[in-house]
Image 1 (cartoon, rainbow, N blue to C red):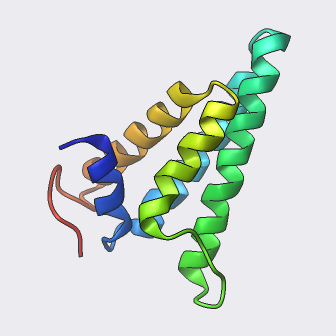
Image 2 (cartoon, rainbow, N blue to C red):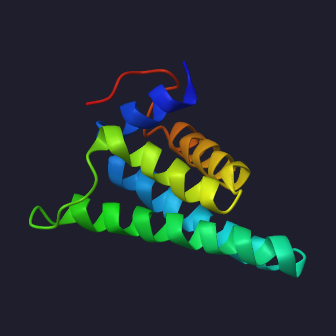
Length: 117
C-alpha cells in the first residue's frame, strides 16, 4: 500500500488522534534537527517543518473540537506536501509520517495495511 493511501486510511480510523499526536511530535523534533544544520539550509528546513507542525496541531485541535474547522482528510497530505516543498523539506515529512505510522503499528493501534474504522 502506498504511503499516501495509508496516511488517508489512518485519518479515517480510530487511531487518527494518536497518529496526529505522533506526527506533530516528530515534526517538532525535525524542526530542532533542521536548526542544527548549516545556516542556509537549516533555517529553510526548520521554517517548513514549523509550518507543517502548525498544520498538524491545527488538525489535532479540529479532531478534538467539532466547532474547529480542520482540513478535509483528502486535502491534509497535499497541504503538508506544499508546506514541505516551500522549504525543500519533503524528506523530513516523509520520515515523520513513516515513523508515526510505525508507532501505530508497534502499539497495536492499527494493523499494517488494515482498513480503518
